[in-house]
Length: 164
Image 1 (cartoon, rainbow, N blue to C red):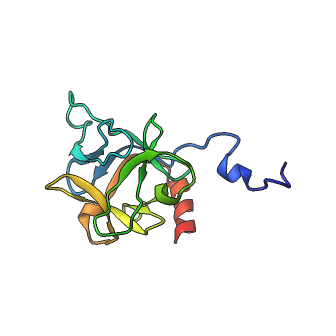
Image 2: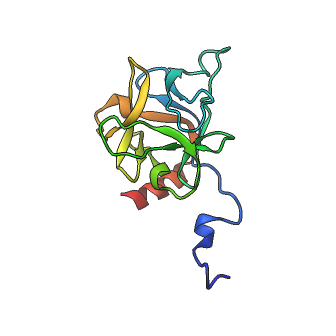
């Protein structure tokens, strides 16, 4: 089997790998977090008050950046999906397919950017309207700086080397 499908473990490892990053995705510019609010497929989503700071509120703010390099609400099979490369491109939830492409993200822990690999755009937000979208990367933009609750620096840095 190894001669036929030598790269199989790269896409389907024998033991599931740990997530690269987990927890809330918090804007470093304020106390708002990405919240998918248990939305269905094809839905867009935005920002809301971080649940960790505001007990008693409901929402869906626990995410995983998986080894397949997709971002999904924990325990669900819907992924962040970006299908266009235009100004303020929307992000929708779409069934995870594991093929990267529209769902391929890396977390740049040096600049705190969440980058969409295919379009080379960064996750951005409008704090007033609480919308999230993809925009041209700008290291000086505070609205493009995000922090996961926890992340595996070793795995992320390995990914970044492949990306840059």
